[in-house]
Amino acid sequence: MLIFLKTQTIKGMRYLLISLLLVTGLACRKATDNTTDRSETKAELPAAVTTADQYLLCAEQSQNRISIIDITNSTFFWDWKAAVNNNIPTGDAGWYNLPAEAKRVYNGLYVLMTASDAGIALIRQSSKKAVFFAKGIGNMHSAELLPDGNIVAVSSDSNYIMIFRTDTASLPGSITWKKKFPDTAPHNVVWDRTRNVLWSAGQHKIYSFTYNNSCTSPSLTVSDSFALPAANAHDLFPVYGSTDSLWLTTGGKIWKFSAATHTFTSAIATITGVKSISSGPAGYPTVYLQSISDTEWWNDEVQNLANGLPVFQMTGLKIYKARWKISDDNTFSYPAGDTLKTCE
Image 1 (tube, one colour):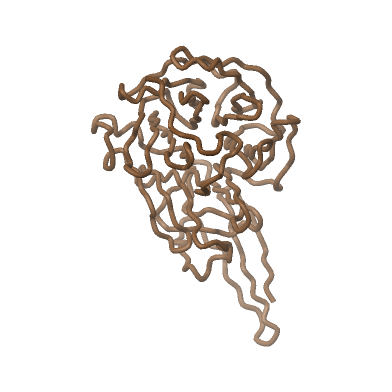
Image 2 (cartoon, one colour):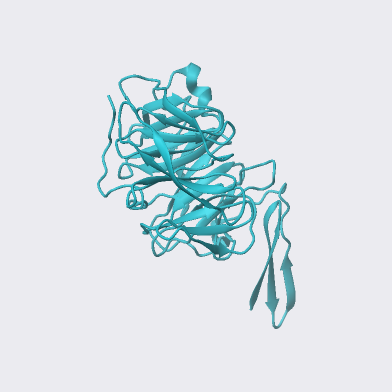
């Protein structure tokens, strides 16, 4: 008989596994400390993997890289580092320190990433070439494709929202349009192709923006705003398979936001420091990444939302965000068969 007791501290999830043996008595495994080696064998991980292969796309800060990790055998399927694998000049590679986000775009053939040291890049997965790259403002926390191929991004420190004209023939690119965000600390941007608006949440509200669809003279205008149910929004990402719902993490909870009704639904009881959340089809648990402390914003494990147990863990990694790599993972934002668009 197994009984799982779950405790939570601001330092992150800790778990106590108690095995109650009817014949031999009680045996316990203590919760590990955050500073202790928490590596586990594959056999000790929960049985979350029910498909042949499950891959996580990670913003991994220990080596300043974007990684695709096969969690069935804990191998790195793909790595991208600005200083190693591509056409970014050596003098600009430092822009990509402390990667903050990675999204699969253009039918999964490209990766869009941002970094805390202000870099933004659109990377062709097959060649690891940055077909577009530029330097933004402050802590570049999130980026998104606009329908014409231009890229919108937000700075969580400088409180700017900005647009880059994606001229792949002129690199590095530059900011074409920028404006102070109407709130503080914007951390996310998501395109909504059903309603033809951009969503972004800050400290107090979530905003919708309309885009003027001008490739060469782009701009955004606030069309609406809604008070958040709790302060300090962080991750905002589509619920798998939905054209209406977005995952939203705030300082102490996880929510679902309906883009259709503008309502918030609590998805889990109090949980702090969640940097990313990602769902998938049958066989894929909804996973989240929780920072290990208030000052160490990464973790070396990705957890199952249903039970808090790790679906992947590797000592030494500093993952900031992790999302499932699924071929049709974002119908909320992009049309089927979407192909690369540029503004040259």
